[in-house]
Length: 427
Image (cartoon, rainbow, N blue to C red; front, side, top):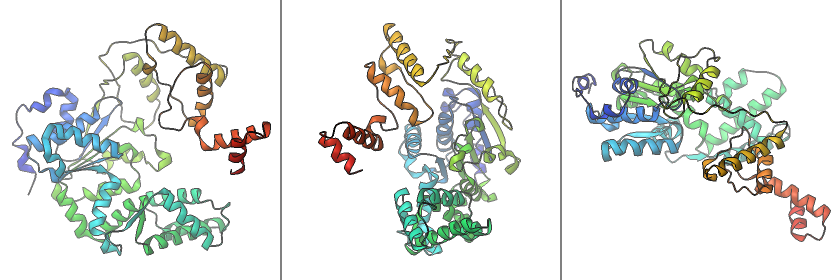
């Protein structure tokens, strides 16, 4: 079934559009062909994605099973499915809203036997992969200190994200160290295949290999998914980029690809993200329509002016200027501390001052760049009696390595401290 006939059936005034600003409406309505939505921070990209899906299903009568929506986390996928469900009802369960990895698992459970895997293949998590690399390193009689499993896993993961198999990896370098790493990669992959197992990176790489080796399989999914949407496109790696390209390569689905992202928000290069994927989208799809969402719904003009002045220094970016109708807002306060202790003291002083003005502790959040930076802040909070909770990390003094170190020091100072002596003795 071709998608062209849907376009003529678009209601003149879809009720969905009433909740959208003009550029959001444009992004939702542009359903045919490749579309790049450059979504600035706080510009309502999730609303655009969910309303776009609802528009396809409710207004254009596209079968839900013909839509594939890709997000980067299971949490985001569940949120999107819930929001779409509130707009279209139970039919949302017929469409695929998932992460790249989850979508690949569903495909591979059906198709992996073509590549010699069992349909019930195992999926190794990080701990399983590290354990296997440890075994491989030992079997190759290599020094685990020179070839630590975490470092080796990082090298192999990077290679797989760039679609480099172990044979190609071996050819890309020379010297003793590279040869040994290539041997680890080779034997690691060999053991995975023998066990009919895949690690997380294989889920992407093997699916790309499957589509390349079996064009009929690729065509099946190209025909099934006539509309493909990808969130956070700036954070896709090479394997994810190629997978999207394979799914939308056929002329039969009219290349109805919508990617949403912002090159200014690309922060996952250390995980293999390739910012060129979004920068070069218009080169890959010369007929692409580019829509910029620049109205921010979260921040005041003062915050946005500061943000705009910073991101304007980024090179090779799609021009945009974030704006807001929430007013000028309070000025930004910058405090230059003498050291980390002065900084933490300033935070507590400000919190206590604002508490006196009627704010609650739940109104405050402290952000820092690395988990290690929380130590001094937590220390001052404890001494000053400010209750707090650490989100996304274990409290500094509750971390095993810190407890072990403190137990050792306590045992040195007080040998009668039996609990600390036993803990330090087991470290």
